[in-house]
Length: 133
Image (cartoon, rainbow, N blue to C red; front, side, top):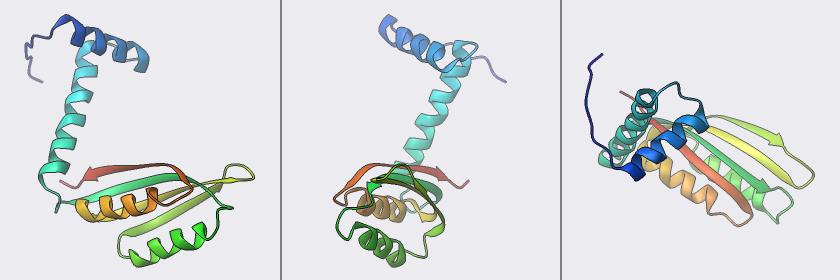
């Protein structure tokens, strides 16, 4: 491992320290390593939208909303080549959570996720992409 010296202003250092304590890091180096990995991952995703990625799309929706289940199923079938597996969980009487494991070009996965999460009555949604190296 290499030792690197960096200079941070007080406000940024306070934010790093707050993150360190909130997530239980043992020291600043661990927190900064994770932040660096996260930033590099984001830059890679943005720079190469054609890159092959694995993804997890997590979303919560109102299962009683008119035709929503049918529309979501249609989205999945329209992009069947991207979906590896899906997990469906009933949260309560009105809400369902789905996790779709995806594989494909980053741009295609983001487009699919946008179609799903922008559907009316989808309450929350987030895509996590991991570029293949």
